[in-house]
Image 1 (cartoon, rainbow, N blue to C red):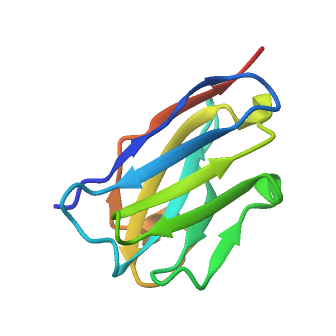
Image 2: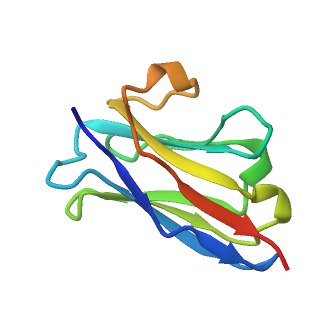
Image 3: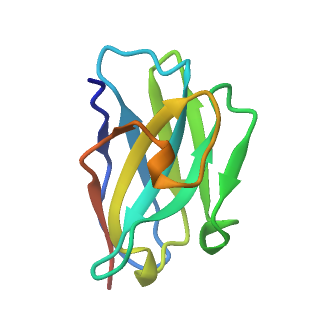
Length: 123
């Protein structure tokens, strides 16, 4: 069973930046599309971004366009979520998830999940 691990969360002021990482220790991510999801208190988990296996397809939620970017370094077996211009409404637990090959927007399309990392945007 693949286990993904997120890191990089924390407390940041509005307007600040954070970079989250997603990795599966010892496992190559070459064959996997990676999605980032988030769940705010009292809300449903929602898709934020996804990147296809080769990085050629990237999809963004409207709420993060122009602020968040996703990238992958297959040599380092890591996918990154760069979050800039953070807003209080970005506060959530962020999860990475993996599925073979193609980007997907539905949680049910992903086979493997991390346990999440907390991001809090507050002054």
